[in-house]
Length: 70
Image (tube, rainbow, N blue to C red; front, side):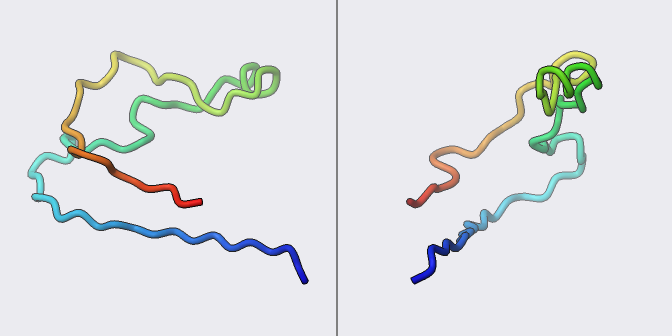
């Protein structure tokens, strides 16, 4: 018997309304930039806050979004 595992990813699609302005869309990487060399090497940081002011709050999904099954 081999100790093998499998990764299962289940995606739930959501029907959304189109937008005219792409700036209304948010990505998980918004407001994040790569770390400086020193921070990455000595502190193990993978990201740091990006330059400028934080983006204004954007609408989010209402209710639970995402599932973890064990």
